[in-house]
Length: 623
Image (cartoon, rainbow, N blue to C red):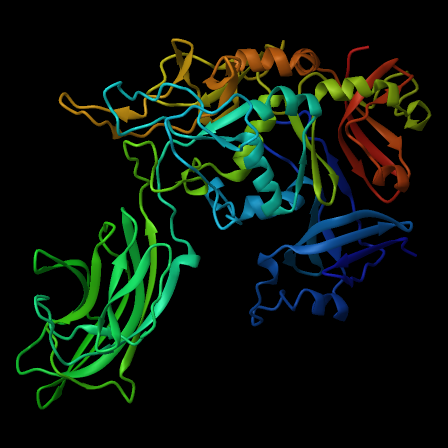
């Protein structure tokens, strides 16, 4: 009789005497730092029962079309009445004489929403409806409580350039909070790491994109085809808005009242584009072969100037000089200026005759500023948008960067919290160590472990920690962790951050963002790789520096204990009796003590079967 239960998508699956469930618990403390590993099971073979067939939605039948094998499914596992896996994921792998599934739980299960969706920092939600800073020349105060600040640095802006300013910075702690809010995951770093590093980190915004497309600034306007012309427009068949009442968003307002209908759309901000979407079809008359287009135009010096144009997708001659035309469009206008008024019309069509009883067309408009502009008086268009100007870095890579810089490693605390733990914390927990001396099941008469080895997976003799390559950075800011073992690979890249290093010039961070030609008075915005900097106190004002962020400094400050542990590693494997309750409460932050060897050990992995005996891989710590 079995003493375990497995639930998939909330349903109890059938297990038989041949179903073997072996669980692998893994620690992130001693693996390749660029990876976040999850706990997993060996392949589980479920019997082919009617219940199991229904649960997997008959995925083993070729004639059955289902996406069940291509999706993760929630899983819970109980052993001896103890819930060993409360929040796992199951995947159906294959079917033969049994149904083969596998389980994962831990980090990847919790982070899957960020990892699988491939979200970048630009995908963070604007919940206000937007985050912004007024862009001025004024440098912010040091450790200002604001999340968005102007920190003094050198961006390559020349003294005579009065049109370009230092770009704002965002606090890394604010980005971390936004990722947490969007994902529903709490990221818990040690207090000393928050105080001494993360709270001081700044991410400079190296673009000046506008607000971007915001659904709060869109509306659909119903227009009707007007069989007439307008003076000085150069186009016939102008569309007249049926909206007889005034409408306005942050970017657009209806103007040009003509016969109780608003025809024009006035632009309210500089550097505006309009995303125009819709489809329409109708009959019209024409004596010659037409080439219909749907256009948006503005009137400049009494003449029409097109800002948007799409050709037809279907044109049919219905006889008797009657034509059927259809349009489908999803495109953008050219850049427009505040005060421009645009109109919609048809080019090279004729007298409207039929639209199957409907005389109107709906045009969807969504306006946004493409680039933030700055004026000499120190005020931009009112704001410098934050989310659209964050670096295009994946959210998961940003989290990994903070962990790598701080020398911490991801450990699941509960279903909504990931805790970042340093090797210092593991070693300091020796006072809480679990005494497993009497739990070891000896493999030999001698006082020796089942196996012993002297290298950690994923390590080389020289393990390199790097910043992202950037041609504008000439210095070397990489660092290394050494392992004393000439039998392993000579060198490898352990960590490469998605951010570049930054040179210092005259005690300021130097990011050559602006470029100048021989006679240019105003610099042109260039492109460099994303950066991260430290805020320092400059007589009460904020100043950005890269001092203290070179990898050599970070490794000396945050990896001292880690470097000692991995330099001459000793890894043993033992068979240890661990109860289901102890297995459920397994904490990789707490070392274990084996009196047989008089040593403390950190957990690398635990392989658990339903026998109560686990195979444990352990890394020896300093005495």
